Every structure is written in structure tokens, then in C-alpha cells.
Image (cartoon, rainbow, N blue to C red; front, side):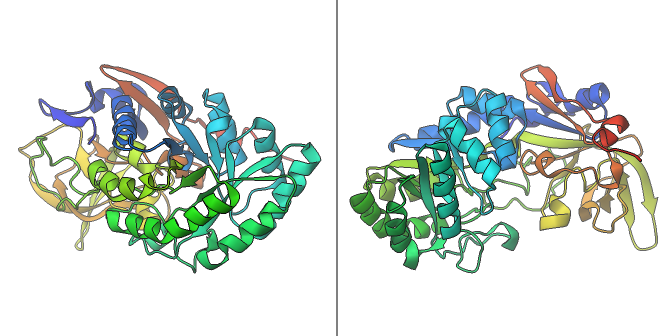
Length: 429
């Protein structure tokens, strides 16, 4: 599942003790396992081998250049949602011709940039967007490859903020209007109808919503193939990962945290989606993000103080909600574990909180964990997706460093911000 494990009492990433990382680079700091990222990509790619397919990493999950570069070397394509993400792919050595551009609000500058770079396809979300792309393509004198994003009206059983496949969501065009939109698009002189796309949400841990969405889409995709000669069907991403009990399987965890929830395995996912997709005889695009990088990263943070009140105990750490916002924004669960085992310490119940001036600045509430003391380093597990990518400078806090581990080696892949970085782009009177 990942390359984080205890060795002789020390929590390690691959062969590197995380306490060594904290001592070398300071905290808070993100740490990524190269082996985990590459292994997850290769296993998913192999599980889909019966299909003519492309695995396009959803860059919004983790847009570090080193991570992009690793996946580009493996042959991955990329799912992008901004001009900035396309720029990152190019800077990391990725191929623009393997990029699909999604998102409901693409600007003129972004569309022009993508057309000049020769992206694989735009995932179009509305009629107005389709007309705008046609107009911009005409100005540039190039054809614009597009796929219409279809909303299959399937519930993903995930957090409401990351569910995207129901009719009330802002994404895509309803199944009842798809063929009408394709007929209109065919009349546009600078639009090349290349495929069809869907995406029902993120952190889905059950294969049934994927299968249900594909089943609803198949008749439409077959008609679009016959009528418009589309070349691909993108089924989006959304494969969930383990957040609960991520260190309990085969590792030396000496206390039991919240019970591990079922994770959707690659094999279960492939069994659900490959058979119906084979019959289409089309190129199939997959757009995983969290699945490839989520369990490949941790956020290390140091305990500053332990505050005890009559009501509860607070473990105050140097990372804040600006560094990892998932618990505050999504009520996301992250395992909290010490990087050094000390079985002599009693178990306590505490809130693990940060220094940001918000009551929502927490990582764990009423969590059982070994007694923490000032100076201890804790690891917030499964933080490789939507961790640093959603980080901010709120409270004028510098962004943490990012470190990549390979075997027994580690290196900086983004340096820590300093105070000067915070104001570099600002102009005083």
C-alpha cells in the first residue's frame, strides 16, 4: 500500500527514518516516497492492460515538479485544470499532447495557451465554453480537440464537496442533452470531436458507483462513436485510498487507532470497469490523482506545547490548517503517529491542533494516541494528495518544504519559504 513503516522503533519512509528528515529540514515538512508513487502507477497501469488505455494523473492532487516528472518518466498523461498546471507539466518534462484540460471556467488566455501547446483534448463543460473554444481556435487557425463532459447523475457516496456526478452539480452536461450538444458541435468549423468524458467524484471506496456510471454511459458512448467517430472515452478518476488504520497492516503499531475502513483495491476496481469498457473498442482514459500519491506522502510536525484543561488535552503542533486543510474543510481523517516509538508512554485522548487563529485549526479531535511531549515529532499520514497542493500563506505562515525519498536517499524538491518570500510580490507605498 505504501512505503512508510516502523523499523526498530523508528517510523521510516522507505529506508530513511523520518526523525532524520525532521532534523535535517525542520518542521512542518512534507515527505514523499518515490517507490510508492511509481508502484501505484505501475500496478494500476498493469491492471488495465486489457484495454487500450492512458493513465492521466490528476495534477490537482499534487503538482510538485518532481512528482510530475516521476510520472512523466513512467509514461503517464496528465489531467489538468488550469494554465498553471499545464505550465508545470511542461516544466517537469511532461508531454502536452498527453494532457486533458478539465474545469468549468477556462479563461481565454488558458485556452489559447493550451491550443498553442497542442494538448490532447479539452473536456468541455458547457455550450458557451464550446462556442468560446471554437472562436479562439478560429483566431489561431488551428482545430480544437474536444470531449464533452457528461454528467451521468450517479451518486458517488463521498463528501458532498468532492461529489461531481449528480445532476445538481456544476459539472458536465446532462445525459438527456449530450447528443444534441454533439450535433451542434459538429457544425462548428474549428472543433474536432475527439471523445467523451465523465467524472463522478473523488475518494470513492466502492466499485459500484463506477460500474453504474459506465452502465449508464455505454449506450450514449456507442451512439457517439457511430455518429461522430469519437476516439476515446474518459471515465475520470476518483479511486479512494486508506486513511483509517493505514499503519496497522503488517507494521509494528503498538496501539490501535480507529478501525481501518475498507479500501477499494486495484483488482476490485479493474474487475468492475474493464469488462464493460472492452466491448467499446475505444481508447479509455483514466484520471487518478489521490490514488497515486495520497498514501505516498506524510506531513511531519513538531509538538510545541501540551495544554491540559478540565475539559480536554490539547497537543499543539507547529503545522496548521494552512499546511493541511483537509480536516477543517472536509472533516478529513489523517492518522497521527509518533515518528519514534516509546511503549512506556500511556495512551491519552487529545485534540491535535495547530497555531492558526481559528477553532477549525485541528488535525484530530478526541483522538487516542501515545502521550505527547514538547519536542516530539508526529507524522500526519496519507497526506500526499490535497495536502501541499491546497496549502496557503494564511496568517502569513511560510509554506513548508517538500522532500522526496528514494531508498536511503532524500532531497529537497521544494525549499521552505522564508519571510522574504511572503512579501516578494507585494508593493508598499
